[in-house]
Length: 413
Ligand code: ATP
Ligand code: MG
Image 1: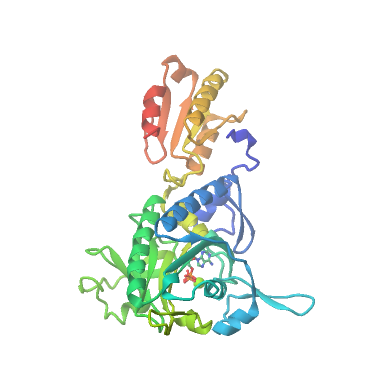
Image 2 (image 1 turned 30 degrees about the horizontal axis):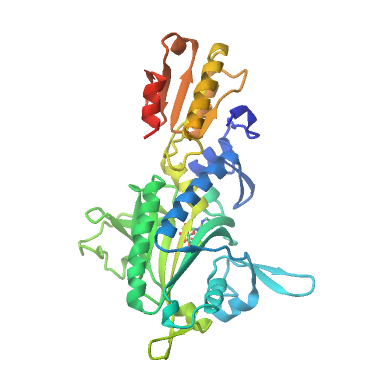
């Protein structure tokens, strides 16, 4: 893509109403735009990142047998009366001019359970797992952390349905592995910990995936030996010990943001909607469920928060809006830049070419650091004289003069 054709521009100043570093960079870089508290547009660069995250999650959910669907965002209030959730704080209520009451989906148990009930009759129809990547609406009380806490946000929610606890538990472990892969692929492998959290009254624990960052909203207690953590809610219950190695946990909390969670639901929602199946003897039994969420927009914020320095974002390869940012610095280098651009694009790479006129090298470099594309390639009269290009990785301090051929080897692994 030609940078001159982007309708967004970078902003020099951080917006005053954004506190979190990720939100400041994302707004300044032209990734997102705030419409009102907790409600954002995803702009061309931002949508590229979000789509990359979406692709990774989709691949990993498909790999554990998830079947993708898209359920409505508009829900009948009656289903919430069935589950007793019609009065929860975050629910947005709507009323039509003919007096019909509806709500905007804040989660989809009320839709997916009646849906699956239409198709599950006997043990032969189980297990089933369905998921979607869709907008959720929650009237969050303090939507202050940029895209970390939206009132409208993108979530992947998967629901699994099983004949018994044992089958559920096997699937739950598979989901854990899939989650670990997702967080590794988006570049948060090292900073994201599986965290024991409360499972409500239905199960002893649920598991959150918490990314360590001061911009987070949760407190976790980390067992360094096991590389897992415990949420504040269950510290007391566990008497301050690690559920795995039973050693004492540190008393100091670490700030983190919940990027995903997996939750045993037992038969809570199956019971509400009388979702049962007939076992081998023909006896009706309740379906055992689990739910598995990841906040995609929050995850994008978490990557931008963790993978950044004081100049801007440092996107990991798999989520970056482009892999290579080419910056020609003279009239003479424009032609060479275009040639390299064509070659890289032909090889299947996503490339941004800074063809903007009347900008100083400093301004172009500043924008490149802010936007945070992994590879920066500078072409100037000086590099042309050497028959080389100047290559710098966003996470490294120094640039190297290398040939185009050498660069191709670096990016086409
Ligand atoms: P939190 O405790 O942060 O409010 P939650 O327990 O309400 O999260 P879930 O309902 O389980 O979260 O949603 C699944 C995932 O969706 C969360 O792990 C998080 O990544 C994301 N998420 C939840 N609420 C929001 C929000 N308001 N904005 C953006 N992402 C969110
Ligand atoms: Mg919440």
